[in-house]
Length: 470
Image (cartoon, rainbow, N blue to C red):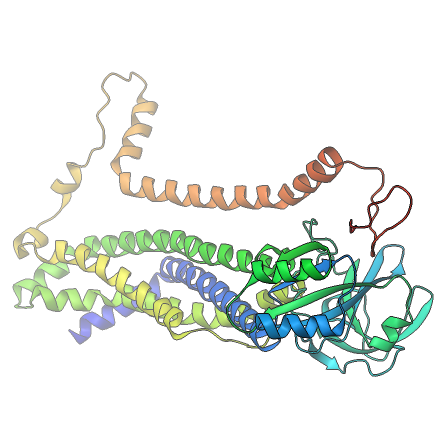
């Protein structure tokens, strides 16, 4: 049996390209699964930790007349909620770039400081890390906004601006053109045109309808947004769920192609060693012994491909995670945080699938009688003449059709590979221009306006409704 193992290893070394192709497919499938699973799990874990530890808001609302401190205290006490006033002002850095600054929070929407520190003086400003990266800003730089100079004291992330949209109706966030920041209350008071709204987080059971009624009795309620309806908060959850479904589908297609290729290779090797198998059975070897020996083919391929795929997947998950953190204003609070289950599946699933199918193929061969295996298989091959087409007069056409129908399995495998490759190409071509088409049809054709006006405070005066907030 040891000689048989050596023969199998030697045969695999002589067929490096064939088995190398199978290993590459398994590496690619496992790599995709591990890379996407690790990146998504890291982002999802970071998002959960960020929301919980930094007290992400459950709602925010605006009222016509500002609430007093006593009114806020009454609402907090009666409805078991953390709530505070928040000041807001959009500051123009340039004609195409804006920083939306907020007052420093006390108990809701606490910032994560990536580097530096929170502002301590009216002339200091902490900005979002993604905005700073996109605009090549760093701690200690001086930025001029609305004709005033501010020193960047730190780079931050805010839990209510994970997907940094300037307006809630926007589709795509642009870190080059829009970012958020924090200033001291004194610094905010020195600005003109500052607007006020309120943020809250439930400490106990949510009582939204009751709180809305109480707020309306104090001051007309202009707007109310729960976090589920806030795209700056909820969009990342939809993105994670979509990526999770993609994580399993694509590696599954790759795995099916690799599985079929292993079956074809093992079957071909057994066909070329029919006489050797028949001789071993005649000498007293058991079929189970031969089956275990020939399982070395799929076992080596599965183990080698899985291990290489896991290693490369973990390494490549880092740049994928960085892409997500640039797209979303989210700090990476965990790294290489992959649960045990995906790692085990990445090893066990390829081994179990390849060995299970290979056992069926090998058993079909070694269960035959030794005399049938030792006997020349020319007669068997001659019976596989392919489809007989006597009605076709052309010899070339008949020859082509017979060659195609003689190896239906290989033709199907080739078709499956072409279909998969075509699907990937079509997906790439479609997704490459889909967002451009969406933007073109939405803004340039559908919602086409010459001007857009946004007010950061309540507009009162002739012809305006004092209870309308723009």
